[in-house]
Image 1 (tube, rainbow, N blue to C red):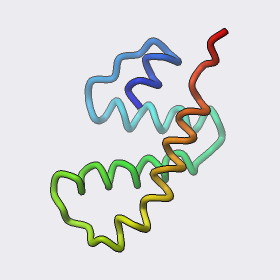
Image 2: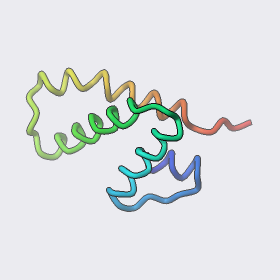
Image 3: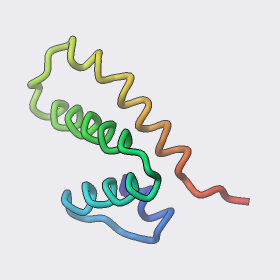
Image 4: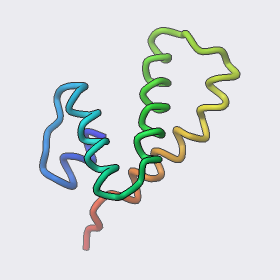
Length: 81
C-alpha cells in the first residue's frame, strides 16, 4: 500500500492510520468497498504473522482474499510507457 500511494499520488505514508485512510479514500474514489474488506483481511494476516493467533484454517481461508488484494493493487498501479 505504501508503494502504491507513493507511485500513484507521490504520498509517503508513514503511520498506520495513514495507510487505513489511504485505503478508505482510494476505495471511495473507485466506488469499491471490497478494497477495504480485502485490506482488512491482509492487515489481519500481517498481524497474525507476528502474533500467531489464527488457526491454519483461518489462514488458508484468508489466502484467496490476500491474493485478490495484491492483484487489485497491481491493477491500480499507474501504467508506464
